[in-house]
Image (cartoon, rainbow, N blue to C red; front, side, top):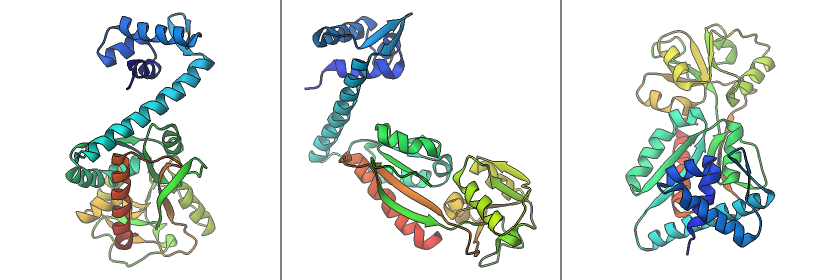
Length: 302
C-alpha cells in the first residue's frame, strides 16, 4: 500500500545524501540506492544530477518529490484516522511558533494537550515570523501561531485576537498598582525593549513616534526570558503584551499594566493552517485546544 521508495526518496532529499538517509532509516545505503535507481529506470529519466558525489534534484525529480510528499502526508492522515476510528488517540502534530510564544504560551498549552491526549506527539518549531507561514504552506508544520502573520491565499486563519500592549514591572514598582498608564509615563523609567526583529518593536516605535517621545532604551533583546529577568532584577521596565508574561503574572513575579493611549495599536495574534486541506486528527485536536485556550485567556488578560 505504501512503497518504501517514497520514504527513501524523501529522506535522501532531506538529508542531502544517500548515506545520511540510510543512517537515519537504519538500513544499508545500497538498499536506498537500489530503490532510487529502480524508480529512475521505471520513469525513464534521472531524478538526481550526481555532481562530485553530491545529489541535486532534476526538474523531473522536483515533480516526483512534490508527489511523494503529498502522498506521504495523505498516508499519515489515513493512518491517524484509522487509529482514531479504532478508538486510540495517536498521531503527531507540529506547530510553528515564534520564540516568545514558545517560551511563554506553549509550555502550558502543550502540557494541557498532552494530559488529554498522551498518545499524540507534539512538535513545537521555534521559527522567525517570516518563516512560520512558509512552514505551514510547505507542510512542514500543521499549524502556525504568531503575531502579525502575513496573509496568503494558501492559508486559512483558524482563530485571531488582538492583544493590548502594556508595561511590565516588578511587584512594588511605582506603576504596579495603577489600573492603566500612559506611554509618556513610561518614558521616565529605564526601558528594556524587544529588539527590532520582533514584530512588537515596530508597534512600539510607531507609538513612540505618534506621541513624539524620544527613546534611548537601557537594553534591547530578542529573548523574552532575558527581558523578563532584567525587569525582575530592577534594571528597568518593559513594554510587552500579557501573553508574554502569562506565567510570571500567575506567580506574581511580574505585573502587567495596560497602556491606555488610543494610538498604541494592539498586537494581532493568529492561528493558521493550510487552506483547502483537511487537517489530520491530531492537528485538528491541537487547533481546537489552542482556540479554546485563547478564548478563555482573552477576556481575562486581553
